[in-house]
Length: 181
Picture 1 (cartoon, helix red, strand yellow):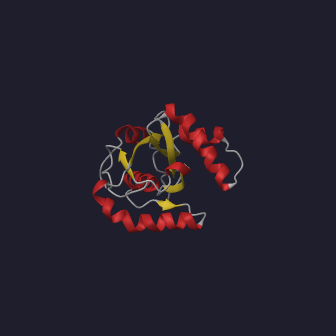
Picture 2: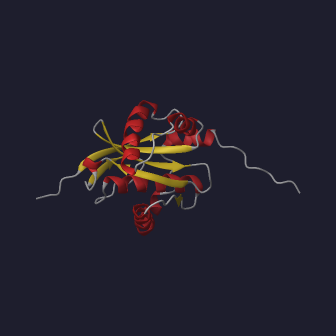
Picture 3: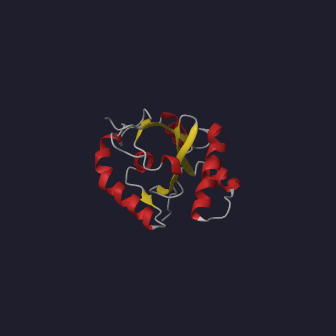
């Protein structure tokens, strides 16, 4: 018998991209915060980061239900991959993702698709591997897994997709500071 896989779609929250998914993100982020024992989030600050182009949030959906997210912080170079969260009912599930800007991996779980998407977008932006915020032992395991897989993804790095995201990022690119001698 073939192993069943859930179907997920990856959506981007960045400036006006994916604005229709903001409430889904707030809901799933609140579940994440409860799970780790953190206080309620400051959504005004989070929305400011998104609106000013300082953060990309990649959401996974199973049908219309938010299944998980990962954050990519653009405030530094290289970008930094932050928190990843998957709703309990989707944890451990093998997934097939529908993101035309990524090659689908055959045996990845929801969190692995999210992690790959953040890494590939971060590398497409910085032309070097993104860093990681590692707060926990689980975060270290996720980072270690990414380091073991990233060479498989190199053929996907030189693509300027998702186009809408890269068009926004290019439009908002600030000139680099020039040092005076």
